[in-house]
Image 1: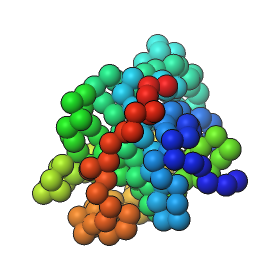
Image 2 (image 1 turned 90 degrees about the vertical axis):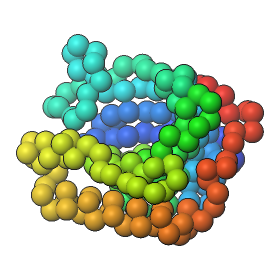
Image 3 (image 1 turned 60 degrees about the vertical axis):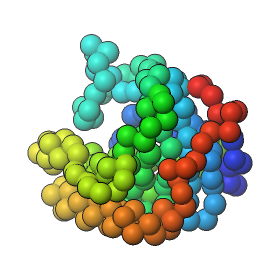
Length: 194
């Protein structure tokens, strides 16, 4: 499969145990050796994993349903994926385009598909202040529960923490691909809600 063109519509598909857990629509911003960047506009459509009560699930049970959802109208996401790594960094913005945070999502390396990319989330995340001055772990409780439930091993959890620390170091040092001014990127106009 070849690379996607800038502006091309793709799907970012989160997989758990061979099944779809979430699908977000996005536009390609960059698809080059070393980096894949995709933009999800506010109000875009998505599919999310839900339980029998149609409430979004945080951790995978044995079975789940897929329910249509929508990205909030006051949030948009520019996801920057250093190829071959176990993380992506998402610039989360509000409706006035204010940068809320750099959100490091720990996950498997992206796998290219005919319609976009697939990955598996690793529960643990990192939130970095917009000015890169401070950072903190997020969802440590979910990772602990995932270990307790046998979804991942304690060794996996330690590896996720190590990857998070590497990702933070890479971002703070502005090493590839974070040497680009991603915080200055803006949609060109054709990237609209899907």
